[in-house]
Amino acid sequence: MGSVHQTGTDPRRARIEEMRRAEQARQRRNRVIVVAASAVVVAGLVAGGAVFVNTRSGDDKSTSAGAAKAGGTSGAKSGTDGAKNGGQTGSGHFVTGADGVRTWKGTLTRNHVAGPVTYPMEPPVGGDHNPVWQNCDGEVYTKPVRNENAVHALEHGAVWVTYNDKAPKADVAALAAKVRRTPYTLMSPVADQKDPIMLSAWAHQRTVTGAGDPNADKFLAEFVQGPQTPEPGAACTGGLGQ
Image 1 (cartoon, rainbow, N blue to C red):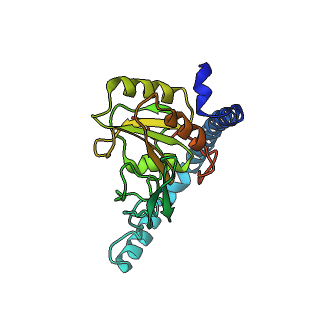
Image 2 (tube, one colour):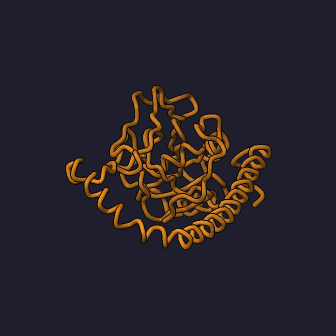
Image 3 (cartoon, helix red, strand yellow):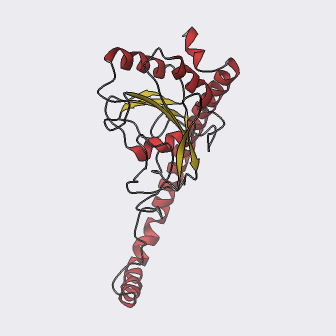
């Protein structure tokens, strides 16, 4: 891999690799906990089965009476786990620096929402987003991903490499290879973006001329788990794949 570490300094790369190992260890612990908890639940269900059967008749009567008083509903809340059905991005605008990086000046909201979000930029660089992040551990997607999931990945410190049909195939292939060997990145096509190849991080974005543009490596080095990250060290696996 050698030169792949062009995307950041050695300390940055080491820190990212350490976070990846910690995440893998956490996932292994979680699997053990889930298996143990499942065993406890099954045992509880078996032990409580007889009690449930004996009390079911009385519970049905009281539930029916309560539902009648409530207008025939069970009292369950609508929506998905309290998540909003729609989202927003906040307010602001891009300011382009001398280095060509566009920085969002203003607020970027970070609520979890169940429905679609209308973003003022394409690709988006922040705002409300889906509760599930798009997997971003060097993931290359050949089909479009949902903005709402990708924005969640940006919140975790990922850089999102995007391209449209005007991007040369050779550049797309070279960028895909670069992404695959760089943790906390993802890549996907975005048909409606204004430039052939763009890189996005939380609140930051730039256009590059191709895979060989030194600004591509510079952007990755600065923004992969960079200081702009709202949730540094958060997972880039265990989310949504394709």
